[in-house]
Amino acid sequence: MAKRRGDMNYKTWDEFWAKFLQVTFHLQNPERWPSRERRAQWCLSHLGADRGAKILNVGCGDGVLDICLSRLSMHVTAVDRNPSVLAHAKSEDDTKTVNFVLSDLRKLNLPSGSFQSALFLECSGLVDKEQDLQLFRNIYEWLAPGGKFIVDCPLYDELSGSWSKVFPEGELTFHHTFDPETRMFRIEPSFKETTGQVFGLMDPIRDNLPGLSRYYYPKAEISSMLKSVGFSVKIAEPHYYGEKYFAILATK
Ligand SMILES: C[S@@+](CC[C@H](N)C(=O)[O-])C[C@H]1O[C@@H](n2cnc3c(N)ncnc32)[C@H](O)[C@@H]1O
Image (cartoon, rainbow, N blue to C red; front, side, top):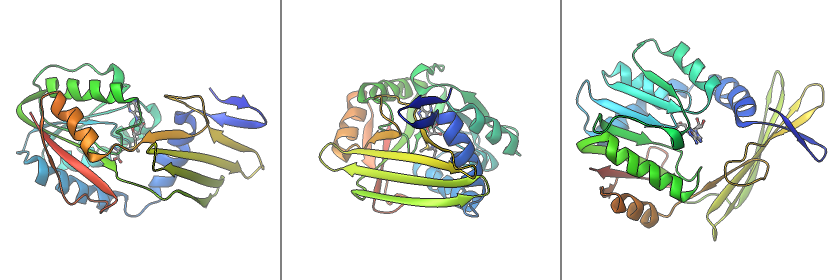
C-alpha cells in the first residue's frame, strides 16, 4: 500500500517499480530483446548447459532472459517476488514453457538436486548478507552434482548521479549515491505525475529509508561465501556489462 512520510507520498516496490520501470520504461527499450539474446548466449557459454537442461533463475525480473533461454531449448524456472512483472513476463512467453514462480527468494523451497544450472543476476546484496548466504546454501542443495551457478555484482559506481526521463504519465527521476567505504549503493527514484503530484519509492527490505539500497560485494567476499557452502569458484570473464561488473561461476 502507498504510504505517506513527511510531505512526500511513497509507493511500494511493486506499485512503483512494476509500473514505471519494469513495464513502462523497459518496454520502450529497443535493446530489450537483443540484449537478453546476447545475455542468454553468454550464460550458456559459461554454464555449458546442454539442450533440455534445467535452469533456475532467481530474481528473474521481466523474464526476457528466461524466454530467450527457453527458445534455446532450456527448461527454465524463473522466480521473482514482483507479481505485476511476472504476470507481464508470462504474457510474453511465446514458448509457453517457462515456469514462472512468484516467491520471495528468502522463502523459496525447491527439490534437492533438481537443476543443472542456476542464475542470480543483478540481485546480490539486495537482502542481508546472511540471507544471500542462505540462498547460496539452498542453491547448492537444489543443484545436481557438477551443477553450475552464476552470480554477479557491480564492482563500483559513480559517487553520485541522477537522470530523468519523461513519459506520457509524467517524469521519472533517479538519484543515486555510492559510498566506497561501506560499499552501499542507494537509489532514490521519484515520479512527478502530469497533475504535479510527486511520489517516491518506499519499500524497505533492510532499513526504513526511502528508495532502495544494495551492498556491492567485493569479489573476495562473495567468493568466500560460495566456497563456504561447498562450491568451487572462478571468475566468469568478461561480464556482459563490461569492466564495472564481475561474475562468478560456481561449480557444485
Ligand atoms: C535489478 S532486478 C534484476 C532482474 C534480472 N535478474 C536482470 O538481471 O535483469 C532485481 C530483481 O530482483 C527481484 N527481487 C528483489 N528482491 C527480491 C526478493 N527478496 N525475492 C525475490 N525477488 C526479488 C526484483 O523484483 C527484481 O525483479
